[in-house]
Image (cartoon, rainbow, N blue to C red; front, side, top):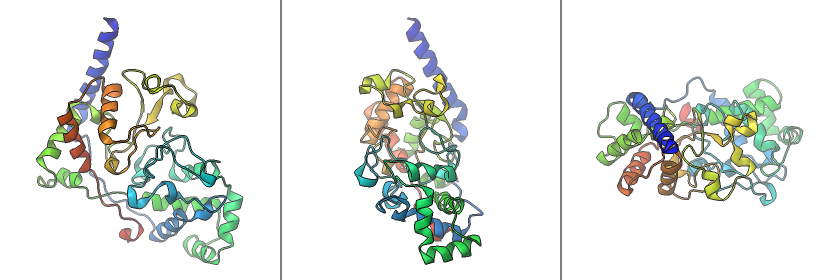
Length: 318
């Protein structure tokens, strides 16, 4: 009885929070201002350069394919020599809007995030002296860095250029953003109904703001033990606890943006949900403590399709 009352209280809190923020739950994306076109162009080249990896086989774009939602569509990414990672690659689009980088938030900035894949033995398996030696041996890079930064190629400047490019990857002008700006015809009646359901079920309590997520951390498994039911936990499943060591951060992850969610399957940090339908059912069970009818799930998925904006990059920002 006590347990039942506790879960009912938790569900009530989620729904109350959703109701409080529903009036301005999601705001339109804005194109970033004051970015350097020259840095973006250089960063784009570096983003696609396999020489950042030890064996010259893996670029940033290998796991963050800009033509396919900024992700790689595998449960875990693969690095040099075919090494398999332990976590699902999130989209790079709109990453500059997140409160931190990586699922566990261990990097505070995009610049800091770049250290992760460079050094990770199952990603690029490289190091900065090796990367810089390769880039400095390329006369075109030497010229580009001199022109853009007024000096030589350094670790900080490589990071700055890539981060500037990543900040430019904002998916503006989605149908839903046009709807929020007053175009009542920008989305369908089904999508409008899906948005109302998204709010009423409480999804919006975590997925809100300009990025429809990415601005807070949340425990995976508010209602029930997701990891036990999945078959056990791994070190990666500890989430933010691996960063802070705090018990309250166990199984806590950055809430992902839903801006391109229809393009970035599979889902969750472990890549365990193959479809949006499956992901919504898992979220309903473990984060909301309820079941959602099939027809409501279909409407919510229709709404999520309306969040897809333009996936242009560098030259669009001139």
